[in-house]
Length: 180
Image 1 (cartoon, rainbow, N blue to C red):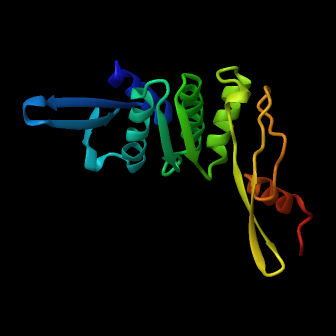
Image 2 (spheres, helix red, strand yellow; image 1 turned 90 degrees about the horizontal axis):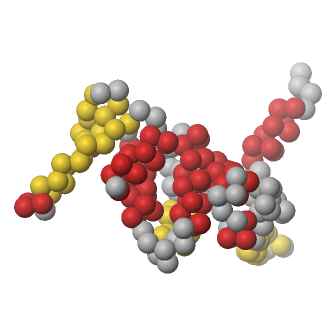
Image 3 (cartoon, rainbow, N blue to C red; image 1 turned 180 degrees about the horizontal axis):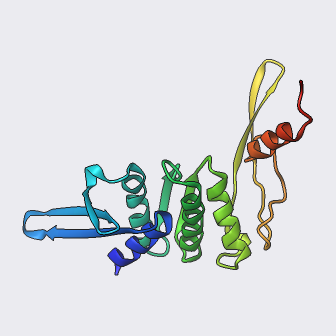
């Protein structure tokens, strides 16, 4: 059922979490409690990351094929390992016929999608990446739409400047000989 699926995905993102849902349908009220290692917490005491990602997971898991879900920054407040799992969930949802549009700054979300392609959980042709590349030419700023493609091995064909490349740029600086 939906609650079990939501709880399973929450545990993928934050291991050890449990959810207890107490529905009072006569009053149109639902009470959520979260727990780690047998301890129960009220919603206001739960980790903000769980509160943030919960409606995203519910929206994905409760959507039917043909649905459109728009998600902005699903990586917020989530550990990098959890972000990769969210990328996988997004790819699985898309593979089930749900159109998922995501705005993200997370290379981990992107890599979760790439790993799903690599593991044949979604075909690369069903993944569309769009990057708005802002450039200054003379005194004007121009925005160019670049659409890198993911191949069946999860590799990306085009890496425009600024497209999830900051880690590589930082590592190149750190690999330079030290300046004394």
